[in-house]
Structure formats: C-alpha cells, structure tokens
Amino acid sequence: MSMSPLLLPRFLMAGMSLLTFLALTAAPVPGAAEEALPRIIELHQTACQFVEPEGGDQKFSANTFDACEVLNEKSGEARLSKAAPLKLAPGAYTFRVYNDDVPYVLGFWLRGSGLGRVTLPSVSGGGIEAGQFREYAIDLRAGEYRYSCPLNPTPAYILQVE
Image (tube, rainbow, N blue to C red; front, side):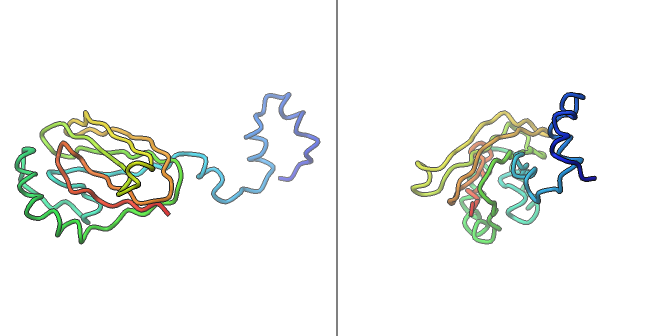
C-alpha cells in the first residue's frame, strides 16, 4: 500500500506511530531493523568447555575447578587448535551463556586479544547456576577477542570481529 507523505501528520494525529506508518507504507530496508537490535549469541557450558566452538559436548567427567585445570592442561591446546573461531560483524550483541550441567557456579569473560585487551571492549560476570543462563551485552568493534570461563575453567576460545 503506497500513501503520500502528506498523509503522515493525519496518521500521527490518529494515534498511529511513525513506525507503524512506515511499516505500512514504505518498502522494507534489508537489515535495517536487524542492525538496530542487539543480536543474541547462545553459548553452552559443560564441564571444562564451551560446547559450540568444540563442535559438541566432549562429555568430560570433571566436576571441580581443579579437575578442569588438569584436564585443560593435558588437552586444552589441542582442543583449541581444532575449535572453530566465532566470526561476527561489528555491532551490538548479547551473549546468553548457559550452565548446562556443571554442578558449581560459572561465569563468562569476553575480552580483546593481545594489545586488543587494552583497546577493545570487555564484558564479564558470574553467578550462572546449573540449568540457568545469564546475559552479557557488549558493543563489539573490529578485532580479535578471547572468551572463556575462569570459574569452570575453559580454554580461551577465539572470536573474530570483521
């Protein structure tokens, strides 16, 4: 339905919002609404790992921080070399981090890598109980990041923002 822009004030006076008016009368602009809203990235933690970058749950039986430290000392580098980097465009994101089955409280830490640790944004927090999730909002800029759980602990997985 195409309407003259001269009708805009009448729609506004009739209680129709500008957004509703534009949705009814204008052709959609690809990606415009998507860029305005934060995108949600879901990450799941199980014992000693984030599931997504490792291509699935490795079913580690470690139930303590110390057990994960030992496990990651033995296998962390090899697993990290096979892990798929997360690649995103710059913009606003919300990381929704789940504690799928770890019997203690977990957290999340996303930070720049190398010099980027000083120049790129960072977000962190804890308090993720088993079976629950927390959300971490951040506006990512171009660069390389690392994300991990210092409480689980996990390897420092790669996030590339291009």
